[in-house]
Length: 371
Image (cartoon, rainbow, N blue to C red; front, side):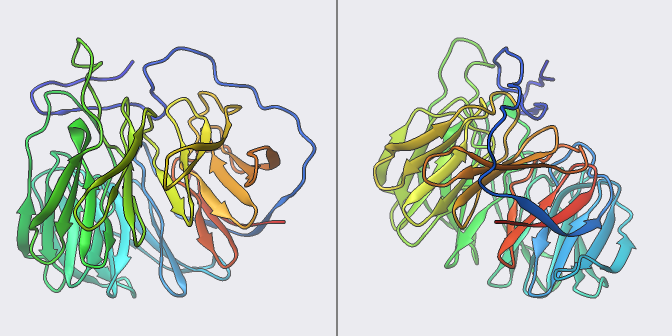
């Protein structure tokens, strides 16, 4: 059951909750066309219940445990470079950029370290930090659990601006952050709203409605964007839980197309295609210009498939039993599979040195190749 709260608070939706009944699909047997190989293994500490993501810099990987251990590893070997105790219960992170490594706490603390692990500054925002802090143009942007976005000065953590909007009575607890490109931050909100916000000043450039709440009850009317928008040089796309996927022109937010697809996991936009995992666990590929379906693999039903990563000829997703699945990029057929340490995989794999970087909720960190 989902734990629900009224009065502008959030619904603490367990990972994989879709409002639907059914047993998770059993894994099908297949003839492997490819193989995952582990290049190195590292460890950052148990992540707890939150979605705590990794971040990469030129030669380092940074990860954090739910209890606040922040670790830097060498990206080529996985060896630990340093490990510090932040002293906070981490609920959001890790973010990086402009020489900073950023994490946030369940009390609203934002901590900024340099790449050697020295604390640069500490700030506090209005409520729990859930999204990954992002930095660009000298501003650190942090999403909080009450739907606000704070713009903090990257040099000292002082608040530069604040964006806030009204929220429905019932919303999904979400780790969505912002996606930044060319001085503009794109963010999705409860009620299916998408906004383009200037990074330096917090000014709203345009807003759009990805999805409209529908239904007779507050639960049925949840239609929140719970993942980061994806953007390229032409368009920005977002997807809502119990709602739609829609794309807009980046200049003025002019609508391009929309489709009825629900997801709380998010998408990947690469060249001509959108890759996504829907609320049922199906992996779907859409044409980015029209929204038409290219293929769909529904063999991961109710296995809580992550947002996809695209690598070479493969589309890769993780699941809640710690399996990593490689699907053929052309038709979505099974190509490879590997089970890691058994901890759930919640975050989408990240590309690293011609391979992938994957973390489990148990804190295991894997650099893998696929061939």
